[in-house]
Length: 430
Image 1 (cartoon, rainbow, N blue to C red):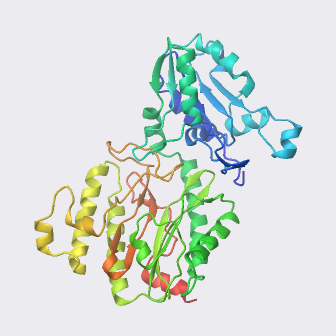
Image 2: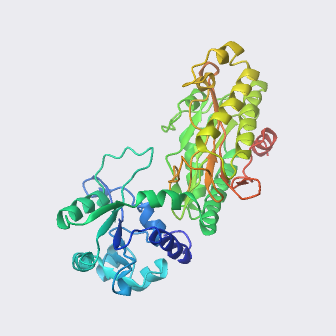
């Protein structure tokens, strides 16, 4: 991997937290992701299953983690299975985890080759009464592909029909939602790489450049700073493209007078950053662009102040909606009659700001985390209000990543990334 070795104590602690919530005489199993085919012998770049990484630090394919706190043999309370490596694999594919290296990465003392899984698993299942399966229950998931995890669950139910089944996800939702200090450091590193990319782009953008050229500038800076690349498909949207919320074609030319919305973030060690900035292609805001931009910035700044322990996610979004309504009235985009006659299920402000303001961020860009419980310290959220005005060929969104803290203001991981109008213009006109 490009990134520095992560202190294995992070993964040891994550496993301890997970196992503390398991029911007696139960086993939890976590599988790596598949390598997905494109066609012929081509494959997509490998991305590790985030739950497996969260609990082990293992970042290669064909890996399985088994947790069994009540195992009769101490060595079987934490087990890691990895693909057996050899000289042939080293020549053709590069270095893979040895048993010694797997321990160094994960802190798991018992490491078997994957070919031993069936035998070892059958042995420990004779001691167990229940199995925790790891299913994807994210509120935005829409996965149609059968995963390695799905295949394991089918196999396990057929092989061991007398066991009870439990869900890992309910435990992981809470655990992954609240970050350890080491995780916040990794997120900060991802944000710092994003900062470098943005500052590079500020001095590159001018009328006539193409959106895909800007994407390339980000990728150049990300890769040279030990990131694998973008943590999600980047949005580089000039002019009216910014009014398409998930515009990812990045194929148009940036024109003089346009605003350019860039929703991008660098990945580092599987941790995501998520930034949005909107800048004038020619380096100078018009009065109207500045007016709308500062309205969005005020909403973002006020919304950030609300991210404190005890805040409820649903009520938070209602309050942000009130802030946005006030700004849209000030911009002349709404009038009092629009607000008085609004549909409570789709308030008037939704005409110009139709998406949510915040989501958890961490190992996934839209990370796991409880949404129906009060926020607590060390949760990390995005803050990303926007105003979209198709009639004016302009869409403006601003987004930072923010850590909730006890008895302190929220900590903005992107505090050093230019965002004020004057900062943007200064950087673009150096």
